[in-house]
Length: 400
Image 1 (tube, helix red, strand yellow):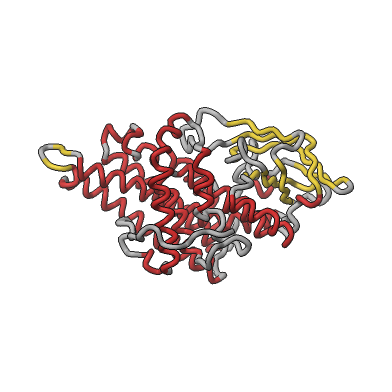
Image 2: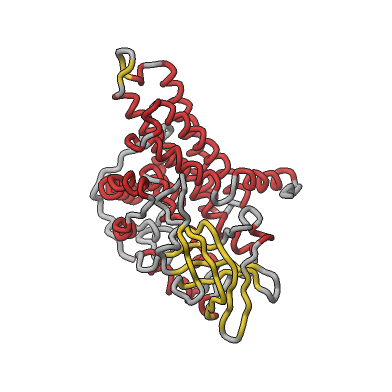
């Protein structure tokens, strides 16, 4: 995949990066972040409020996002330049500080779907699918969660796969599957009837027996088109079985990478809310002076900045560990649990800064406040990630 990496925007550190973590990015990485930020501000941000209100997805943004390389950076087959895990984290942060739903679209396409192919696919599967996912030629979704199985997916998966001749037959159902209402292919995780092991399959969404139905009436991530999926005798050729996805351990390898990315998204959401609150506080006048001149408002803003700074330190180090090969499940789990907890606290404080205006979409804080609830829960709840860390530090599993 070829992406123009020539500078077209000047990189400026975010004010919320109070300790200057972005300073470790290379000049090429900073240029790419600057271009992505400028694109998001000009082409994406103006659309999100209307689509959030209508619970629709702005499909017109997809080509531009992929031209920025958001689904290409991580994979050898598609990356336009050598880049670090910290850089990829900052890219996820930039997406989320504009809109959590757009960040989720990219997280599904890049982390969950391309990640499944990269980590669990054969060389032939990687060569076939990764360029198409990177360019947006193929839109993917990730089918793990089920109506009766979420946190207990390792043991409670009910979707089945049966091998017959040169193909597999899949039956079951999935829930909360982002992108599935308009996507082209879904990574379906199913339990092999022969050996009871969880395996992964690339299932075209137009397969007979595959039905995706939009989930309505959400109060969080309204732009994301989540779906209920039913699979009724869906035939999948052997070539579409992920070659190296043969147990839930392989699924967990994908989730380890994406949990760290979700932690970065949580920091981006907190920054988006903080920036909205700070801007409002500087311009809104109460009792004859800007809100920002009041002690209690400064207290809320400083506490928010403290949460952002602590979370940013954690996710930067988690990405460094991913880069050098020392990151384990408990490291990404702690990053996700901590960053999303602090995000939830921060968006509430930032909404509070806006008073009554904090519950309307006009000033952005309300959107970040609502969307944070979904980020807090998906990719492993705080409780489940806590138990992963707890097992690591005590040697005792306390999941049930």
